[in-house]
Image (tube, rainbow, N blue to C red; front, side):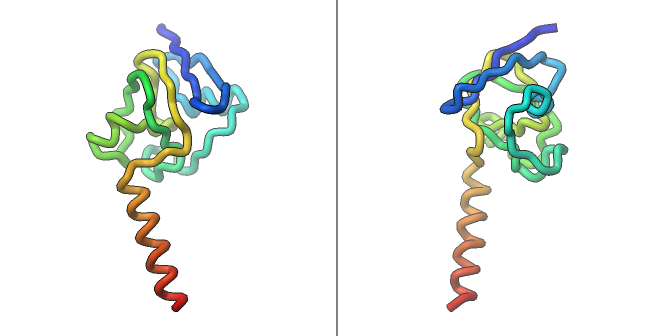
Length: 110
């Protein structure tokens, strides 16, 4: 069983994660504060941008194929190499949706 180093950019936090466990499960075990909600690859709360390295995440249904190349859902992602992840980064489709909701709320207030 292979173990890989997962480094979280800008935090100084690093963990060792086997190819058989999810990044989120190891974060929880190590006491690292990683945001999450559904734990089934749908809500995107645990999203992180893949700065360097590769993951496998066949059950990350909340991401398109293109998004899955650039982002990891830590609740589903297993390392396939050493990784650098930038937590709290979301695919542009999510950012666009959040902006649209904010605009709708602002218009409703007027």
